[in-house]
Every structure is written in C-alpha cells, then in structure tokens.
Length: 416
Image (tube, rainbow, N blue to C red):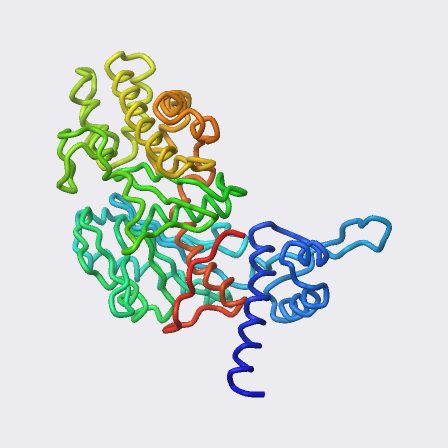
C-alpha cells in the first residue's frame, strides 16, 4: 500500500472514531444501533470503532436497554476517567483554574487570588502556571492523565506565523504569546481562545444552547461580548475577532467607552458602567471598598426592589441590553440568545421579561417571534468549563488520540 493510501485510511479511521466519540460525548450513553443511525456509519464500522475505543479505555459499557423484540442492547459512554482537561478563565477581575473530567465535572481546582488588570501579563501568567503545576502534581500522585490546558482570555486570540498571540488591552495584554509561555513551563498542549467564545462553546455543548444550530451566547460581565453560532459552528471572522458585540454603538455620539469609541453597549451596561450609573442616580447608594468585586450586584438588586432610582437604573440597563439583543436578532436571525457571564447570570433572571419585550418591540416582527431568550445554565464555572472544552475538542477531532505538543490544531468543528 502506498504512503498516500495509508494516510487516507488513517484519516478515515480518525474521522470515524471522532464521529462516534463526538456523538457519545454530546448526547450521552447510546447503543451501537443508535450510533450507526446518528453517524451514518455502517453497523460493521461502528462495531470495529467501538471495539477499539473500548480497548483503549476511551469509552465504557454502562448497562443495557431493551430493544423492540430483540436482545437488550449495550449502552456505551465516553469514560469520564480517561483523562482530565484543565480550564483557565482569565477574567478582568478574577482567575479560575479548574480541572474537568470527560463528564465535564470539576474534579480539582486551585484558587488564584489576583485581578489580572492590576498586574503585568508575565506576573499573571506565572501565577497561572503555578496553579497548573499544583494540579499536575496532584494528578501525578493519583496516577491520572492530564490531556492539556485550555485558556479563555478577555480579548482577541490571533494566529501570527503559526503562533497564537493574545491582544487584550482591557487587562494590558498586547501581542502576548500566551500558549507558548505556558507550554514551555508545564509541558502540556495549550489552547487559548476568547472568553465569550469559550463560554459560547460550553453553553452550546452542555447548557442552554444544546440542540440549537443558530444561536448567540452573550457574555455580560465587566466587559461585554458574544459568541455567534451559525449552522452549529462559531463565526470567527477574518482575524478571529468577530463577536465584539459590546463595542457596537447603540447611542450615536454617546458615552465614551474604554475601547476609545463612543456609545458602545459596554459603556452603558458593562459592570463598571452600571455601577457608576447606580451611584450617579441613587443618593442612597454607598461606594463599596472594592468595586471590582461581584458583591455590589446583590446590593444593587436589593436596592432596585425598594428604591426608585436604583430600579430605574436596572430598567435602563435592561433596555440597552434588549435594544442590543434586537440588533443581534435582525442581523443573525438566531434561534436562541443566551445570557451568560457573571453579571448576566445575576441580573438576567430579573431582566428577562423586559429584555424580551424590548426585542419584540425593536426587532423585525417575523424574526423576533422565532427567537427564545434565556439565561445560561452552567453557572459561575461556565467560562473555565468552556476553556477546558478547547482541549476536549482536539481530543474528539483527533479521533480519541490525546493532543500532543506541537501538533497542528484542527479546524473547529460543528456541533453535529
């Protein structure tokens, strides 16, 4: 057999293995007949693929289910203990470093008490590496495998000459070779992406976006961004910077935004802007010792229930979000808009009816009637979880072969 033919067979085997693994990962336990139907593979191919995956420990048998008149069918699932992926969230005001098994449950975490915007990039990255090394020591002692590290950052991750570099001016990062800096110290595969995109992938795989092909996942926190999915695939744009929804203008000549523009959505509903508006309009509001903490949101919500000025500030934020969401509906025609991020998770439930009303009023009637708007389901760990899926995505794309340092990254896959 020629080298080209061997490569073709090897590629086909990888694709078939990846198709089976992806279905099991995204849909849970399935029998072989269902896998053949869902993947389009022959029953013989599914039998061969699952036999190999069972032998390698990537999947396991988890019971039986009744069939129509025949023998019970064996259920298969991705083995959660095959390996773990580390997810790192670099927010503007916090860092999370957590390890997830292949059930995407947190199995270990290290606290990093640092605000990235207050420190140089090298200092922040060094502390992230220290946290990763602690997890490595723990997993090594337990005899468990680490598959790699995913990092979500509040900025653009762009490829330059085959190397990714991070541009995150809100935390003072410019042209930072983040992946390489971490990889050189921890000797694990490292994958970085924008925080909103990581959050979006987590919600689409495991949360409120499951089952949707066209969706927008909004990250609402200190900053504001979005992940846009079309036909199950994230839209990145020519320089991987698509989704900077927070820096689209909703007020011509409006408030100056920290990006340098004017009238940006973030300048009106970003964490700092919202806190500033509450203080400005409500004489009863009292400055907190740490405006970067998330605690003020609870005080704001409490005040809004009994204080007219705080209530008006909350309503105004809902209106701005709703108008911005209506723009997304008109431009992208999504099935779902999902509200995530630490601020979105806290404010979203109390704002949903107002946001939906504004979308109905501002968006085109036909498209507005066909979009659902809801709050994300994955909680505070959603961005770190999304970062860990960057590693898992490579594992699935490789057909179950763990990522290796220096290997070319696979093109991001659709959810199907």
